[in-house]
Image 1: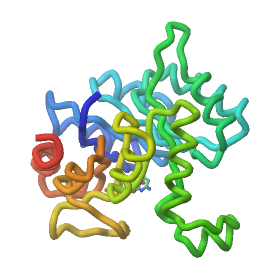
Image 2: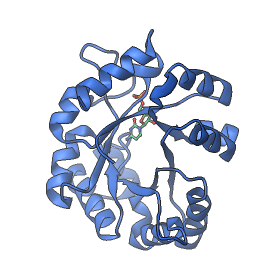
Image 3: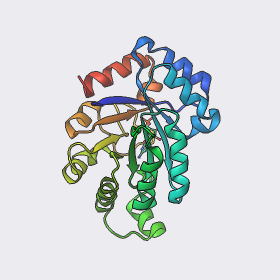
Image 4: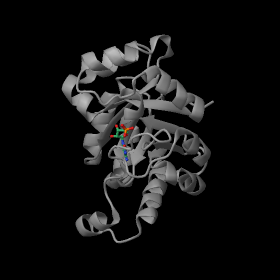
Length: 232
Ligand code: C5P
């Protein structure tokens, strides 16, 4: 899979999602399904979107004991998704188990990426609540290396971290980056944002774009602009 734009379909339910995706006609963008939509509609929404011809990144961020994650991943693998994820904080044993669960009898599997530290966690809360006292950048890079050593395919990170992740973990280790905004666009609750063109220069492999597309007056135009700036 090459560079691509993934649309974060942060909608509450099926009808809104299917209607939204219908606007793209034959283009069939890569779609991210998160907890809200998955928990409200269940696995059927994933099957339906796959049957419509979209690739799917199922963003459920699993984090549990290895045996539970392995079994859960086997179920998700059966949904024929393209990318899924776990928290690197679950440790190497959990990530290895996740890979085992994901791998189908024929040896194929969806890509598996790791969340390092959530972007909602800052240095102060990490030190206070998690008792992790290293600088955030070192923690993120360490988690990325741990994920790489466990055999995962990449990480979710800020576009600001893509270059450092690639230099530590290799250029084939995927960086999937949210926090993307058009120049002059509304940042919303995102703090550290980059334009699609800047994310391309930073070396991100995939950008995850939600509101700049889903809340645009013309979502198709916004999506095509992202693709043009990031891939084109
Ligand atoms: O609307 P927006 O472009 O901010 O959407 C970004 C998407 O990426 C959301 O689904 C958000 O939950 C997700 N995400 C993020 N930051 C992370 C991990 C995931 O914004 N660190």
